[in-house]
Image 1 (cartoon, rainbow, N blue to C red):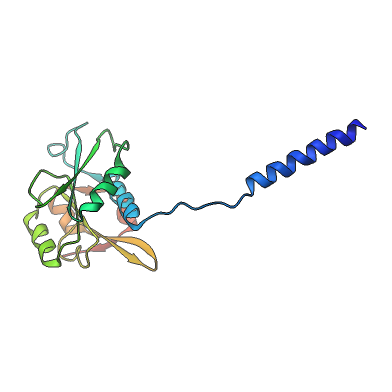
Image 2 (image 1 turned 45 degrees about the vertical axis):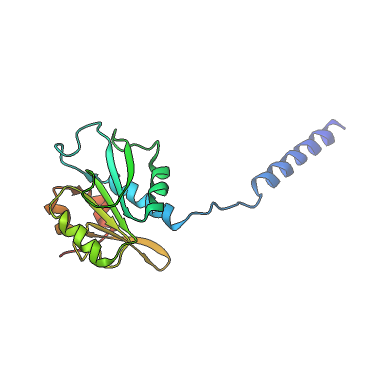
Length: 180
């Protein structure tokens, strides 16, 4: 008799565990902006700034030009996630040179204005990233684009070298490389 009770309890436990672990999974909604914020955070992880530009433990300034709503998305994503001892401080800016930036994300502006921003920062150790068409070809360092429903990125090697920034070979292996 005890064998049947133990067997029933065991069967009940297995059924309960099976029903709990096999409950339908609910996916988390991930927005395109959140994915772009993740890409930018990873760019920071795989980019090295000169010591005179970004001393050890100094905060890293991430500026957003154009798309003001993206500032909040990026700030939420990087908050509490320092990179190599650098806290990331996000600020919206009206002009690229309005404040010192280590990274500048450009979106929601005209291609002509974006090209001018890139020209103004030519050689400066500022990682320029955008989702604008032909940004990398215009001299921007990293361009996010969608291909086949997946976000991908291009890297302009010449712009990166002239700025004294160094991208990890692991990052470059995943990028489409562009030259001026």
